[in-house]
Image 1 (tube, rainbow, N blue to C red):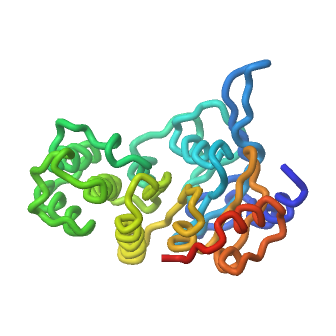
Image 2 (image 1 turned 120 degrees about the vertical axis):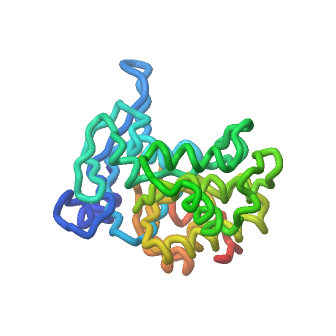
Length: 270
């Protein structure tokens, strides 16, 4: 990790030191392949996400931001460092208790829903998997919570718009009553007008359900809408962590962050 990165993250990276943290990452490194074919996707990343906060990982494609989410959810096994969720240190496997606390919303609403499963099946199966009762009432409440309503319950993905599909995906993520949502570019596949609707929905849900968000995006306007703090990633490293207000005012201490801000000149938080 660069000296600048250490300066911005060291004070935030003491795992287990604060009981009010939802996610704590310290010196996380993730790689793919072995020997000469090894690719270091994340290099000694450290940050802390307090409960109820919203934190963004930003950077260009291939910077390692989505790989951090994959490591958290157990989709990548080749990592070292420390990861804690709600004070519990993560090992190599994730059990049902983890997935009741942590859920993920993916980038593509067209690929994330089974084309032959109705909305009712998608939500009912998730609730059944996590041993919930009162499934009928819970399905209707989930649909209401994401702004769809029960009239969408027996529709299939091909009968829904992109924004409606993403609302179903969010409802599915909310089904186990998690405290943490991992958001992997949740609006990038949607039209701009629909992006704003989904971001407003996520903002409302976070407040209503006291959720914690860890969001990955390359879009600084999206991050500025949803997050209070951002970590900027370049070539697998976190080069700077700064408040989103500093981002809006084009304040940064790292040249790469300044490059990203200048490249997005003219953006405004929705």
